[in-house]
Image (tube, rainbow, N blue to C red; front, side):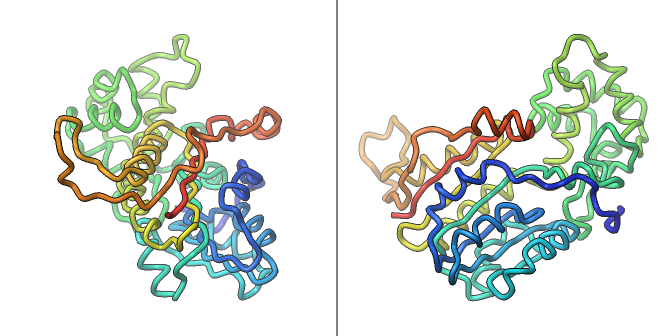
Length: 312
């Protein structure tokens, strides 16, 4: 994996003003950016939180942390960057004495920096090894999944994480033609399996999404991270998440709804036996979307959905 070549694209954070409003950033506040990436959101938060504001940024990708460190260097000791997975956000923050906090941000999914960096295998448009790991510390790659999973397991994965309606046909073709070692090899197999047809998006898009999610255990890590984040918030602290596909958004939405209710017993239970008490409240009923002007300027933002909850 190439971790030395800096991406040539610029990093444009999405929905910056909405993030600042959702976090209710205040001077002197303490904030956590759980997916700091290129540091765009972190920079805006630190500016709004000055004087006296502090930020702890987490990312599993060491290359992203290098870029963020350069971008945020002017803030000096006000920022602390940590290499790690955000599923461990509670452990990371407490080990650095960074709790309680005023706000926590998740900017989920794949960043434009990772997509543009050659050798990572995230894009089906560039020849690269089938890697797709966010962190070089991880062992399993996309190639491991593609070349070792059974046809049934592979089809299930493509359906679950990619919502691909032709998952069985694609899995059958992959198994027939493997081993596959590069992005272009996999893309050609997918194209032969389903054809280009009249699809609005390239047929490999969902396949690459599914493999990336599986390699990095993104949905499982998100569920663990939300639970850990809630316990870090001080009273009135805000938990904000930006998601870019329905699987992430559903996890965030359902978690916020669950933790904003006093009882989470099944509907058929006549009397509450769960003893669950709400400790979040929904700040907005639905998801906040990017403005038309932002979508026009930054098409990547078009699928963004921001949700926010506040600690009771």
